[in-house]
Image (cartoon, rainbow, N blue to C red; front, side, top):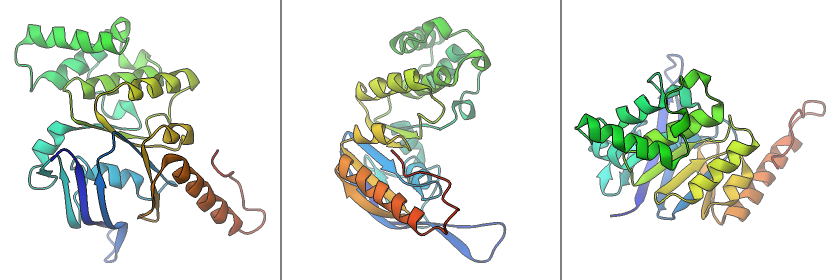
Length: 249
């Protein structure tokens, strides 16, 4: 079953010890088969919750998610072998002093021989043009270089699905374009949340999330247009003088 299925999925959490649960996602049912899928929406809309369900970082309060035949709760280890997750801030997942060590760490479970593991890590770093930075401290690298290292470490184990949570947030224009080209060339299915609407229009399919619900599911350009309309409507509802932001471009 080479696809991802959400069946009646809701997520509720208690906030600050309150007896009343807050619903982050409402009754989501989806089949995700396209090669490139974008997820867009305002901050707090439920995008990150939707993505974290895909590899078991968040468990559904109701419903079920199946990724390539594995239930994300009943077989979360199998799901995590198939789904690689890259966070917005690469420092949240780069845990070793250098990129080389981080890529080798990600390979430790699948490649037992240390010499073979080192060779595989070097191949991965070369593929992403990072070999020259492999032995520098991750704290000496730019945000874009760290993001690419985090991506390389995740892809080193060859997951079937790559999930990216707002990967371009910390990137300058050059590294954003490098990320864009890298994503386009990957064999994996890519599911990505983003505020970058140019990146969103590269996708085969776009989901628009609003207040924990999927309010649009379809063509990328149509999805971006729908999101802009939602943002414009929200701004129109604000009192005069409080409109501090613009509609996304």
